[in-house]
Image 1 (cartoon, one colour):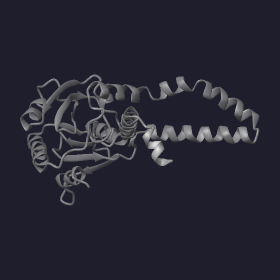
Image 2 (image 1 turned 90 degrees about the horizontal axis):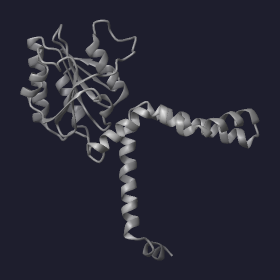
Image 3 (image 1 turned 135 degrees about the vertical axis):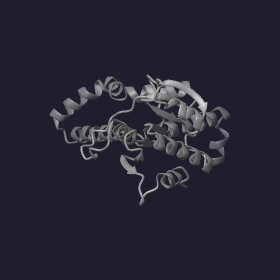
Image 4 (image 1 turned 120 degrees about the vertical axis):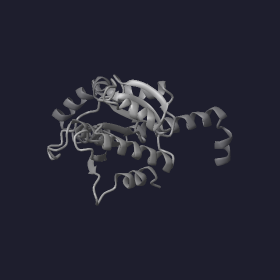
Length: 253
């Protein structure tokens, strides 16, 4: 029976299965670390409530949820409009099927950190985003597309105080390309964030709360190098090394 089952599968079916697997996998990676997951869990809870209400014949709840599901397409479009825009943007730029994880590159980390030290010594503020599994196309809408291989010289030029893009964030993608500059990031609403942190730090923390990106910050006022990741802020000091933490995050197994 099993032999007959496989003999009836065409090569087109195998291609179909492979393509669906890749698409679903990439979609799940894009949803990873976002608030979309919580929204989907909410939808699941509402669906279970509907079936429970229908089973136990709770008419009021059944009527409300039935009418809600009748408008489900509109609700999904409204709630996930930014996610749809992000996904379509990634497909359009051929990022959808690409692995966003950084290759293990000590040279890249060393050069990036040296550049941050340069900014620190010269009192130059900087905000550098390292894209991980989740695409960041939604944050590049009004940014300037660069698509150039990373180099300290280019990063220094972008964050030059007389350059037009120095106030925004730079996004470096998984292939170590400077993808965008002048990006506007969402500000964190964390009321527990120390008052010494300014707009750059709040923007870095905000992005780390909404995505799995690693964000490096150089304070223009103090020159201190910081890192925002997974909704937490880390500051360079005698007990914590941003460079060491960066190496651990980018080279994790």
